[in-house]
Length: 247
Image (cartoon, rainbow, N blue to C red):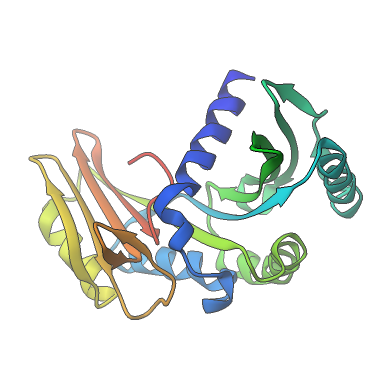
Protein backbone atom coordinates (compact mmCIF):
# COMPACT_ATOMS: atom_id res chain seq x y z
CA UNK A 1 0.00 0.00 0.00
CA UNK A 2 2.77 2.42 0.93
CA UNK A 3 4.56 1.86 -2.40
CA UNK A 4 1.34 2.56 -4.31
CA UNK A 5 0.64 5.80 -2.48
CA UNK A 6 4.23 6.94 -2.98
CA UNK A 7 4.07 6.22 -6.71
CA UNK A 8 0.80 8.10 -7.11
CA UNK A 9 2.16 11.07 -5.18
CA UNK A 10 5.19 11.11 -7.45
CA UNK A 11 3.06 11.12 -10.58
CA UNK A 12 0.88 13.95 -9.32
CA UNK A 13 3.84 16.09 -8.28
CA UNK A 14 5.45 15.36 -11.62
CA UNK A 15 2.44 16.64 -13.54
CA UNK A 16 1.95 19.85 -11.52
CA UNK A 17 3.64 23.21 -11.97
CA UNK A 18 5.56 23.80 -15.16
CA UNK A 19 4.13 20.69 -16.80
CA UNK A 20 0.86 22.54 -17.22
CA UNK A 21 2.52 24.15 -20.24
CA UNK A 22 2.85 20.85 -22.09
CA UNK A 23 0.97 20.74 -25.35
CA UNK A 24 -1.87 18.30 -26.02
CA UNK A 25 -1.33 14.80 -27.35
CA UNK A 26 -2.63 15.79 -30.78
CA UNK A 27 0.86 17.12 -31.58
CA UNK A 28 2.26 13.61 -31.98
CA UNK A 29 0.47 10.26 -31.95
CA UNK A 30 1.25 8.61 -28.59
CA UNK A 31 2.16 5.38 -30.35
CA UNK A 32 5.18 7.11 -31.93
CA UNK A 33 6.98 8.55 -28.90
CA UNK A 34 8.14 5.40 -27.14
CA UNK A 35 9.36 3.69 -30.35
CA UNK A 36 11.33 6.81 -31.28
CA UNK A 37 13.16 6.77 -27.96
CA UNK A 38 13.70 3.00 -28.08
CA UNK A 39 15.19 3.26 -31.57
CA UNK A 40 17.58 6.01 -30.48
CA UNK A 41 18.97 3.91 -27.63
CA UNK A 42 19.13 0.68 -29.63
CA UNK A 43 20.92 2.46 -32.45
CA UNK A 44 23.45 3.60 -29.85
CA UNK A 45 24.00 -0.03 -28.86
CA UNK A 46 22.11 -0.01 -25.56
CA UNK A 47 20.05 -2.91 -24.20
CA UNK A 48 16.53 -1.71 -23.36
CA UNK A 49 15.81 -2.19 -19.64
CA UNK A 50 12.41 -0.56 -19.26
CA UNK A 51 10.12 2.02 -20.77
CA UNK A 52 6.96 3.91 -19.84
CA UNK A 53 4.25 6.13 -21.22
CA UNK A 54 2.22 8.46 -19.01
CA UNK A 55 -0.77 10.61 -19.87
CA UNK A 56 -2.82 12.89 -17.68
CA UNK A 57 -5.56 15.49 -17.77
CA UNK A 58 -7.05 17.82 -15.21
CA UNK A 59 -10.63 18.82 -14.54
CA UNK A 60 -12.76 20.40 -11.83
CA UNK A 61 -15.58 18.40 -10.24
CA UNK A 62 -18.21 20.06 -8.10
CA UNK A 63 -18.81 17.34 -5.52
CA UNK A 64 -18.06 13.81 -4.33
CA UNK A 65 -21.17 12.72 -6.20
CA UNK A 66 -19.54 13.88 -9.45
CA UNK A 67 -16.40 11.95 -8.52
CA UNK A 68 -18.44 8.82 -7.91
CA UNK A 69 -20.15 9.23 -11.28
CA UNK A 70 -16.75 9.60 -12.97
CA UNK A 71 -15.54 6.53 -11.10
CA UNK A 72 -18.58 4.54 -12.21
CA UNK A 73 -18.04 5.48 -15.85
CA UNK A 74 -14.37 4.46 -15.72
CA UNK A 75 -15.14 1.11 -14.14
CA UNK A 76 -17.83 0.38 -16.73
CA UNK A 77 -15.73 1.50 -19.69
CA UNK A 78 -12.57 -0.28 -18.53
CA UNK A 79 -14.20 -3.35 -17.05
CA UNK A 80 -11.20 -5.53 -17.89
CA UNK A 81 -9.09 -3.59 -15.36
CA UNK A 82 -8.94 -4.68 -11.73
CA UNK A 83 -10.30 -1.72 -9.74
CA UNK A 84 -9.55 -0.81 -6.14
CA UNK A 85 -12.18 0.40 -3.73
CA UNK A 86 -12.48 4.14 -3.40
CA UNK A 87 -9.99 5.53 -0.87
CA UNK A 88 -10.71 8.61 1.24
CA UNK A 89 -8.16 10.55 3.28
CA UNK A 90 -8.30 14.19 4.46
CA UNK A 91 -10.82 15.05 1.76
CA UNK A 92 -8.83 13.31 -0.97
CA UNK A 93 -10.53 10.69 -3.14
CA UNK A 94 -8.72 8.05 -5.15
CA UNK A 95 -9.49 4.96 -7.19
CA UNK A 96 -7.06 2.89 -9.28
CA UNK A 97 -7.53 0.33 -12.04
CA UNK A 98 -4.73 -2.08 -13.01
CA UNK A 99 -4.35 -4.48 -15.92
CA UNK A 100 -1.42 -6.72 -16.80
CA UNK A 101 0.37 -6.18 -20.11
CA UNK A 102 2.11 -9.56 -20.51
CA UNK A 103 3.23 -8.81 -24.06
CA UNK A 104 5.56 -6.18 -22.57
CA UNK A 105 6.23 -7.83 -19.19
CA UNK A 106 4.48 -4.81 -17.74
CA UNK A 107 1.17 -3.30 -16.78
CA UNK A 108 -1.39 -0.58 -17.43
CA UNK A 109 -2.83 1.63 -14.73
CA UNK A 110 -5.62 4.24 -14.61
CA UNK A 111 -5.81 6.59 -11.63
CA UNK A 112 -8.66 8.95 -10.74
CA UNK A 113 -7.57 11.32 -7.99
CA UNK A 114 -9.25 14.38 -6.41
CA UNK A 115 -8.48 16.79 -3.60
CA UNK A 116 -10.46 19.75 -2.21
CA UNK A 117 -9.82 23.15 -3.70
CA UNK A 118 -12.06 25.97 -2.56
CA UNK A 119 -15.62 24.72 -3.04
CA UNK A 120 -14.77 22.08 -5.65
CA UNK A 121 -12.53 19.07 -6.31
CA UNK A 122 -9.31 19.41 -8.29
CA UNK A 123 -9.31 16.16 -10.24
CA UNK A 124 -6.72 14.28 -12.27
CA UNK A 125 -7.05 11.30 -14.57
CA UNK A 126 -3.74 9.52 -15.13
CA UNK A 127 -2.92 6.67 -17.50
CA UNK A 128 0.30 4.71 -17.16
CA UNK A 129 1.75 2.00 -19.38
CA UNK A 130 5.02 0.33 -18.32
CA UNK A 131 7.12 -2.43 -19.81
CA UNK A 132 10.41 -4.19 -19.05
CA UNK A 133 10.77 -5.79 -22.48
CA UNK A 134 10.41 -4.37 -25.97
CA UNK A 135 8.94 -5.89 -29.11
CA UNK A 136 8.23 -3.51 -31.96
CA UNK A 137 5.72 -5.83 -33.63
CA UNK A 138 3.77 -6.24 -30.40
CA UNK A 139 3.79 -2.47 -29.93
CA UNK A 140 2.32 -1.92 -33.39
CA UNK A 141 -0.35 -4.51 -32.65
CA UNK A 142 -1.17 -2.83 -29.33
CA UNK A 143 -1.17 0.69 -30.82
CA UNK A 144 -4.85 0.74 -31.77
CA UNK A 145 -5.80 -0.32 -28.23
CA UNK A 146 -3.56 2.35 -26.73
CA UNK A 147 -4.93 5.07 -28.98
CA UNK A 148 -8.48 4.04 -28.11
CA UNK A 149 -7.76 4.11 -24.38
CA UNK A 150 -6.21 7.57 -24.55
CA UNK A 151 -8.99 8.91 -26.75
CA UNK A 152 -11.67 7.68 -24.36
CA UNK A 153 -9.84 8.96 -21.28
CA UNK A 154 -8.67 12.34 -22.57
CA UNK A 155 -10.55 13.23 -25.78
CA UNK A 156 -7.29 14.53 -27.30
CA UNK A 157 -6.69 16.85 -24.33
CA UNK A 158 -4.22 14.69 -22.42
CA UNK A 159 -0.53 15.39 -21.96
CA UNK A 160 1.87 12.60 -23.01
CA UNK A 161 5.18 11.74 -21.35
CA UNK A 162 7.40 8.96 -22.74
CA UNK A 163 10.54 7.55 -21.16
CA UNK A 164 13.01 4.76 -22.06
CA UNK A 165 16.00 3.41 -20.15
CA UNK A 166 18.88 1.50 -21.69
CA UNK A 167 22.03 -0.14 -20.39
CA UNK A 168 25.62 -0.68 -21.51
CA UNK A 169 27.45 -3.53 -19.76
CA UNK A 170 30.82 -3.01 -18.10
CA UNK A 171 32.48 -4.69 -21.09
CA UNK A 172 31.68 -1.57 -23.13
CA UNK A 173 33.63 1.58 -22.35
CA UNK A 174 31.29 4.54 -22.46
CA UNK A 175 32.38 8.17 -22.24
CA UNK A 176 29.42 9.89 -20.59
CA UNK A 177 29.68 13.24 -22.36
CA UNK A 178 30.21 11.54 -25.74
CA UNK A 179 27.14 9.34 -25.30
CA UNK A 180 25.00 12.31 -24.28
CA UNK A 181 26.13 14.30 -27.31
CA UNK A 182 25.48 11.36 -29.65
CA UNK A 183 21.88 11.05 -28.43
CA UNK A 184 21.27 14.79 -28.65
CA UNK A 185 22.66 14.74 -32.19
CA UNK A 186 20.18 12.02 -33.20
CA UNK A 187 17.33 14.37 -32.29
CA UNK A 188 19.06 17.52 -33.61
CA UNK A 189 18.56 18.93 -30.11
CA UNK A 190 20.05 22.05 -28.55
CA UNK A 191 21.13 22.03 -24.90
CA UNK A 192 19.02 24.20 -22.55
CA UNK A 193 20.38 23.13 -19.16
CA UNK A 194 23.16 20.74 -18.19
CA UNK A 195 24.47 19.14 -14.99
CA UNK A 196 27.82 17.34 -15.15
CA UNK A 197 29.54 15.20 -12.52
CA UNK A 198 32.27 12.57 -12.70
CA UNK A 199 29.91 9.62 -13.13
CA UNK A 200 26.68 11.39 -14.06
CA UNK A 201 25.32 13.84 -16.60
CA UNK A 202 21.83 15.26 -17.07
CA UNK A 203 20.84 17.42 -20.02
CA UNK A 204 17.61 19.22 -20.80
CA UNK A 205 17.30 20.09 -24.47
CA UNK A 206 14.97 21.28 -27.21
CA UNK A 207 14.33 19.63 -30.57
CA UNK A 208 12.15 20.79 -33.45
CA UNK A 209 11.14 17.17 -34.09
CA UNK A 210 8.46 17.38 -31.37
CA UNK A 211 6.03 20.25 -30.91
CA UNK A 212 5.09 19.50 -27.30
CA UNK A 213 7.22 21.37 -24.75
CA UNK A 214 7.52 22.49 -21.17
CA UNK A 215 9.33 25.55 -19.85
CA UNK A 216 12.38 25.65 -17.64
CA UNK A 217 13.64 29.04 -16.52
CA UNK A 218 11.55 30.63 -19.24
CA UNK A 219 12.98 28.48 -22.05
CA UNK A 220 11.26 25.66 -23.93
CA UNK A 221 12.47 22.08 -23.60
CA UNK A 222 11.10 18.74 -24.77
CA UNK A 223 13.94 16.25 -24.38
CA UNK A 224 15.86 15.12 -21.33
CA UNK A 225 18.84 12.76 -21.24
CA UNK A 226 20.43 11.24 -18.14
CA UNK A 227 23.61 9.14 -18.22
CA UNK A 228 24.99 7.43 -15.11
CA UNK A 229 28.13 5.27 -14.93
CA UNK A 230 28.73 2.55 -12.32
CA UNK A 231 30.98 -0.49 -11.87
CA UNK A 232 28.46 -2.82 -13.47
CA UNK A 233 27.89 -0.59 -16.50
CA UNK A 234 26.31 2.62 -17.78
CA UNK A 235 22.62 3.49 -17.69
CA UNK A 236 21.15 5.93 -20.22
CA UNK A 237 17.66 7.34 -19.78
CA UNK A 238 15.76 9.44 -22.35
CA UNK A 239 12.46 11.19 -21.75
CA UNK A 240 10.15 13.55 -23.58
CA UNK A 241 9.37 16.19 -22.62
CA UNK A 242 11.10 15.10 -19.37
CA UNK A 243 12.32 11.89 -17.75
CA UNK A 244 9.56 10.39 -15.60
CA UNK A 245 11.55 7.75 -13.73
CA UNK A 246 14.57 7.60 -11.44
CA UNK A 247 17.90 7.93 -13.23
